[in-house]
Each structure stands twice: as structure tokens, then as C-alpha cells.
Amino acid sequence: MFRRNIRLRREYLYRKSLEGKERFLYEKKRKIKEALQEGKPIPTELRNEEAELRHQIDLEDESTVAPRTHIDDEYANAAERDPKILITTSRNPSAPLTQFVKELKFVFPNAQRMNRGGQVIKEIIETCRAHDFTDVILVHEHRGVPDGMTISHLPFGPTAYFGLLNVVTRHDIKDKKTIGTMSEAYPHLILDKFSTKLGERTANILKYLFPLPKPDTKRIITFANVSDYISFRHHIYEKPGGPKSIELKEIGPRFEMRLYQIKLGTVDQDEAQTEWVIRPYMNTTKKRKFLGD
Image (cartoon, rainbow, N blue to C red; front, side, top):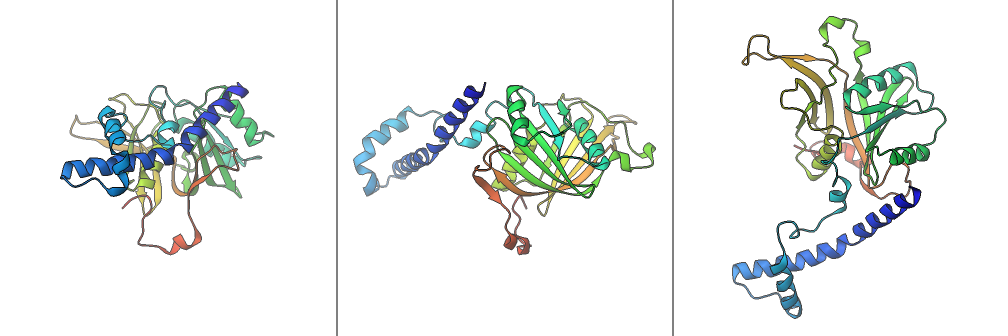
């Protein structure tokens, strides 16, 4: 298993190293196509390669016309099987963090919770790879308050780091009549205002934590982006007076997320390339939205 993981990782890195060459060749063919469609002369720098490039263009179809990227490879098999998630915490978790993680286990279908104990991250990731887990979620705290969540996709990444704010668990709500019962059905997802390229990347990371739901399920999970803060809400709906009357009931937990880093490897790889990270000067760019409008 260890040798297989090394081989798969080496193949993935090799495909990733070819992206620059494939993109450069794609740009050449795009210029040839544009010149032919508009009736313009072939660019001077491409005239020696024109015959070969036109031959390659004639052989292309819908699946090969655009170059694939490492992002395509990361979630290439996501639609073939349901996600299998491991949820754990930082070491020596407090009672509030333990309660929050227990509730997260029911939020994500097919999730398993593990007591961290003395295990290091590298051991956890290797165990998850060996048992075909698709994602690992690590939840962190500061003085008993959950303040961070790390989502690492297996086997190759990416890893997204989120800050957590305003965490309210079902356990914190005293009036149990106001909240519904926790459903374990596969939920419908609402991903609102993830319109930029980074926003679409973030939405993919969150989307692939959930399997495809049945059309008639009454459970809804919302990730709503407002000024780069992602609000998580969890509801069920009922139709007490027929199809035209819908009653929403929040079942918790609820919290806000703030993306601050995406890496191209798994969480145990310190040398992984950083795809995006928030910088101190970005906090002053109030008018600029990174995830969506």
C-alpha cells in the first residue's frame, strides 16, 4: 500500500508538471484557430509549426480540446462513489469542542469521528489512505471555543484552511422545542455567491463532502457567501398545508467560515505548494471580494 501511494503521488506530480507545456501548446492552437476563423494570416512565429498544429487540431474532440489540470485530477473520481470522511480534533479537546465535533458527524453523511489521542497528523493521513477515506476534517479551538477547521481531500489534496466564528451548537440552545430533530438523510446543498474562480474552487471543496441526495429529501444545507464570510446553516422543511406552504426549521449547528489558505497537497505535507493565501494587506481591501460578488 505504501509503495502504491508513492507511485500514485509520483504520477500525479508528473501530470502536474506537464500542465505548463500543455497550456503553452493550447495557446498556440488557439491562435491558429482564431486566424483561420477570421481569415487573417497565420502569426509569423507559428508558420513553421502550422502544418503540425493544424493536424493536431483536426484530431481533437470535446474531451481533448482543452487541457486538463491537476484540479480535474483531484476530484476525477468524486462522482463514482460517496465521500467517506474522518473527523477529528486537536489534542486534548475541551468539552465544547467535543460536542461540536459530535454534531458535525451528523452534518456530513458517511462521516466517522475519531478521538485524536496521541496520534500525529501523518499517521492519521496514512491510515485514512489505507482505508479509502476521501476527506479528513480537523477542528481546532482556542480556550474552549472552536476557531478553525481544516479540510484535506485524499489522496492528493487540496487542503483548505478555514477560520470559524460565531459557533452555536444544538447543545447550546436551551429551548429544544424550537429546533427540529437531526435528520441523517443526504441533504440538498445551496451554494450562494461563489462566483469568482477562487469561489468556485472553494465551493467544489465543500460540495464534494456531500453525496448526491434523493430528490424528495427534506434536509437542506446552505453555504452562503457574504463579503468572503461563509455562513453555514442547516434546515429541514415541511409542507403542513400542502405543496404551496413550506415551513423551514433550523436544526443546527450554525457558524461562519473564513477561508484563509488553500494548499495543493494533503495536510501532512509541509512542502505542499500554496495555491492561495490571505495576506495582511488584503484585510484593508474592503471593496474587493475574493470568493464572489
